Length: 154
Image (tube, rainbow, N blue to C red; front, side, top):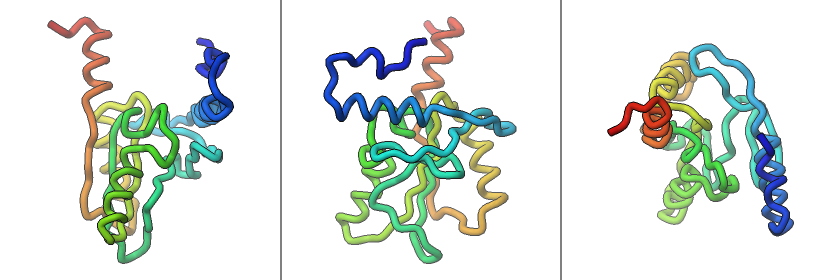
């Protein structure tokens, strides 16, 4: 497969830089049950932590923060978006504009489907000292595409 950035000959410098960082953030490591979370990556548009978590803007995580964990596929992770433009960052920004501090954690991952997300949630709950106040699942795209690929559609 040709990296996306090579297909952007007429793209702006910012677009080319985004897709360079997207390619760099596309390195994965094996993790039992959930398979292929991303390896750490630091860029001006895309950052992935040591734990494989995409950076969320407008978030403040401490012991007293109202905490929201979000799980989903590449749509939630933010494929095609900068860190500031992910669904998790937009949600945290809405809270910030309303004058409320919130900790939003983007556990989205490309290609994930709901079963992997539920397993990841269970693992995070077992091993995290700070539990979430709310958990949001943003799903459907991968499940529909998998059904289409396997000819399980009408």
